[in-house]
Amino acid sequence: MSIKNSPATPAPPIRQLPKKDWEHFHLYKDVREAITCLPIYYRTETHISGIMATDLHTLNTVLGATIEEQVVRTLNLTRNTWDPDEKYTLYSFVRQAQTFPDVLLRKMSSNEIFPNPAIEN
Image (cartoon, rainbow, N blue to C red; front, side):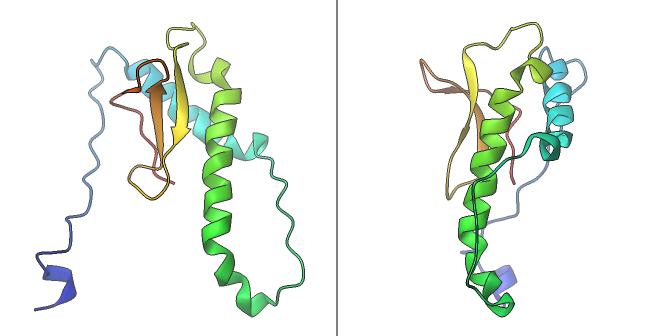
């Protein structure tokens, strides 16, 4: 039996886009647009020195975590682009490490998770 067909291997996630008549579809579209602008706002204090180019792969986890944190920070700082009418002021993007998806939109007072958008970096 190959690893690919092993019963212990979970099925890959299936991408399910929201329907255009969903009441929050505008939020979904605005968040997707905000994500395309992330490189403009992205800032990090990560400085790396004293490592050989052949060892850069060892920084994968650290760099991935930094990127995930910055995605959350930047989305929350650019709230006016994805929530211009302030309909979702009780919600913030949060990172959840080591699980799928990486980023959720969560109501902080009750930990209610918004059903979409969720972001996998």
